Image 1 (cartoon, helix red, strand yellow):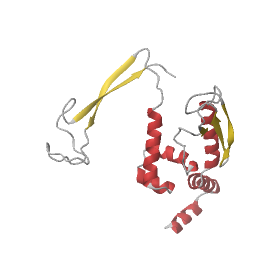
Image 2: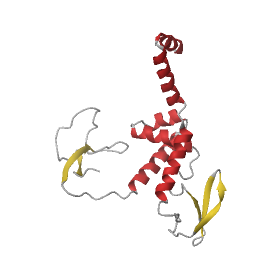
Image 3: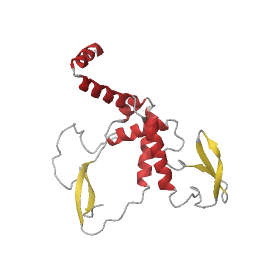
Image 4: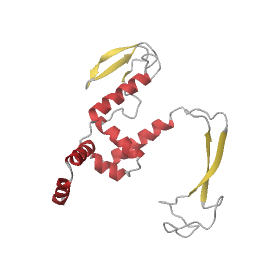
Amino acid sequence: MWTKLYEKANELSNKDQLELFNALKRDLFPDEPDKITKLLNRIRESRFNSGMACVHCGSTSVKRNGKYRTRQRYLCKDCSKTFNDMSNTPFSGSRYPQKWVKFMEMMVEGYTLPKIAKRLDIHISTAFYWRHKVLYALRSLDFNQLQGIVESDETFFRESMKGRKVTHRVPKKRATKDEKRGISDLKIAVVVAQDRIVI
């Protein structure tokens, strides 16, 4: 199969061959260390932009406490606990920090966990755990309140009975429409809102 692709690639112009090579190189051998280093620096700057503080108790009396695997560790003088730049973040305790950027890109693009696990060469339980770390971190963010003119509406989602023993209705086949529209016992209503303030 690859021989046919190779023959097709030979038919391309030199410019197109170079673009194909660069695209394959970016996809198969991404420059992850640089991305990770930039990401870690950005996290460090945003977390400690008002000065170094203990991630456990919030005290500002901290001192350097050596390095572990090239990462600076700190010791809090008040609670005597140690931490590093990545403590209490999704990257904390990760064995594959170089794969996080690609993982988040694939997660945003909507890849399934088995595809992510296969592509990144990690176990599916690791991908599942990482996804929940990211979702927990997003949930713990302080989102701004809506201001000014606010528009709200409701949207409806089918209730999923997957994995449950359902006795009160017949099984639903895939890709079939519900008999009822709007508010009903077949769908769950979710309120959504958006303000008109442009950030």
